Image 1 (cartoon, rainbow, N blue to C red):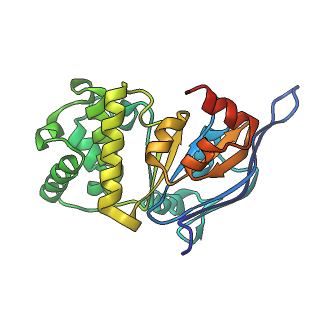
Image 2 (cartoon, rainbow, N blue to C red):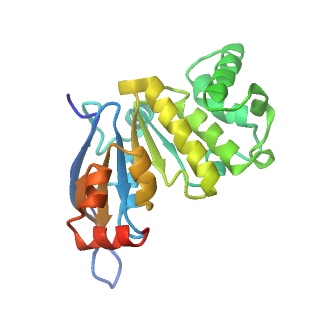
Length: 254
């Protein structure tokens, strides 16, 4: 099976006036396969966000390549990048970041559908279905982000991300701003969506909590100071960590 996402030798070096260059991500490589959930964990400053920003083309890579669904997107821009975003969507740490506070949740969820040429009535029906699939009643389409809880807003954000049927969903600390009970509900929703979509949906799950990764991911990559220091199945990594940083990370939750 060919990987959906292939990252090869990816590097990002920041140049700062009067200071030494800083390597935020150092020659990392990994694959993500259709239907798989891959966890990327590490403390703040480990390079996780920089990796995500390069994959989503919010940041240029200094070196290496990113291949999505067989297409090299390392330097994608303009109309080419817009096509990439039909295959890749993101769910952010803060749910309200996915929505314009002046517009309803339904407007936000349906935006990509309208942009693709879907009629107003068709969009309304599809938005209701997407919200329902994510555990919200159609009435939520009329509410504004400030009128719903963090967990409800994150469900709507997931619905928005899934509207154009992406092959890759990137969850960047998507549960960390929520309380523990709501975290579990969002993980249950993501698991349900994985079961429903099968090989048509892959997830890159960015997190700093190895316990959550153990519950949800098929494989995990551990990052430290811009490097992938350990990788494998979550249970194997937790039970038999080889790197000193991974050992400290696991000890911190026991």
